[in-house]
Image (cartoon, rainbow, N blue to C red):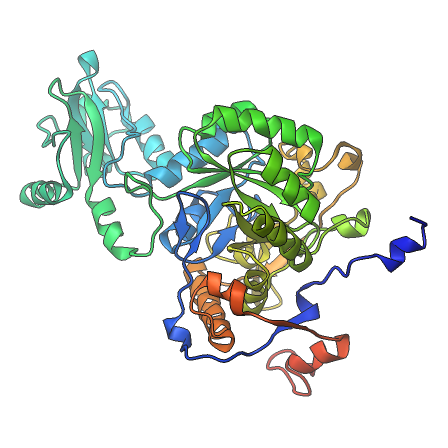
Length: 483
């Protein structure tokens, strides 16, 4: 092939603004559309949204909020192994039928240290473990809120503890909590060794979040990002998370593949790999990595990603998703696709779903939510939250994600830093996006996400055409400009 033929045979790498969904024959009202989706072999989401593993997007609070509202948060890895494990533990402890990973104290623990543990773990009561690792009492916030900080737990704890047995069911636990007017019920074996903990808060939360994604033990589902080259982190997180997500800008790489094979052999959690952007990459993942459950797709489309500017390499999300979906379809692989990057509104999500995605990963959208860890600031009468790319100078200073980008690029920033408008609670954003997607499904005539794959049709839009379909020739409120 000559160099000139590279132009003749070049693909058209379409982005979201290049296409529009065409209306089709429908008997469906938007309210009847169903947006549940299969993310992995074991896990189904009630909304097709996943938050990006970025340190200004997803820590424990965001992961908890997403799981409670039917989606999934992927904990970032720009921190120490211990910090990421602590975040995963916090998600799993947020609510459960029976908490198995019980944090305890001893009779000689000081009140001052106890108060520190309460603040660190955001819990207000601890079983007290005495001689021979047996339950000696329970201590709660009510016991210590006015106590001298130099006192020891044995001086303030409740020694007569109401407990439950290992075979207790939820209804029996409710009756005990109500009868004795207590908030926490330690579960013990015949020798009074603590085997778990049931709390009134967790029972109440199950009713408050009917769409929550939970594991077999009633705990919130949790995912965490890893480097394919950090087997120790993968194995440590495997004790707590349901899903591990390889967090690499360009996964279609021999070293990444070989490292991921080792991880697949060593962990029990389901593994999602990426990012990839081509048919060939998907083909290699399907045929060479036995056991992967999903593909994270899109390179260079994120709002704070400058990879495609700095390197002129990338695979826009719409183009990448369609190519990967064709490979999955050809090989009849039981693998889902997560479109990652560039989505700003429900229409973009609907387009990603139309070209084969099962779910979408968003950073910018969730970065502006109250649960994101980014700083909240006021500028010119509006609130904004801090947001920066994992290839930015700010993220790279922490050094934990240096291997996200290829070795030659470590001297180059592949992300930018900035601020996004504050959007409020993630629940409101999820409801807004679900409403928009269901409206799009109404236009398509698709009642489920698999039906979107089959029934949706796309048309190309010119630059002038895109200007026409957006609001135009009006003065936007508060903007002082016309659109």
